[in-house]
Length: 233
Image (cartoon, rainbow, N blue to C red):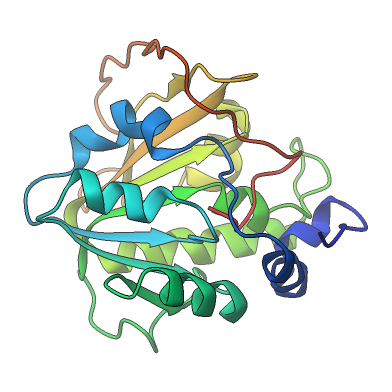
């Protein structure tokens, strides 16, 4: 497996290309079985779902199996893993795409009802250095991503994020922008605990009214890994 020189390497395409050449499958931040109580309530029959940074995760395949009427497109900016996943799942749709700009892949706006990010923004801002004062490159990349996710969602569509980031820093540094109603986070009680955000495309206000978000207990389930969430899905 390719070894990163430092945490910032997680945002580099070359790292993921090297890793995916040597690794068959890995699920950062848990499998769909673990995350279903959080994701499934936002999936409706015939929803159009985009899974970004799919990596070699089982998430897309398990999501499709659990919701057979849903249309799912999975993207990653590593052509190595996209080729491998397309070969392994010929009935599914995989494409190379960079979350900071997918106009070439999806030129039309409002193409999706739900977008799922499992550790992608974590990798994208791996060069932040200090969460108290993140590097400008990290902030710029995160804002480019959220702007593109908003473009691709229908009004009222949801951008779902699973992350290692502490909620205070995720909100303050990367999610506080016009056009999103960010609901109170939920805790995914697996391993050391992860965080789940629901960001609603909202053209009228920035922050939603408070919504109750109880902690959901999960029996069993796998554990994600790594110091920083990655493009591995």
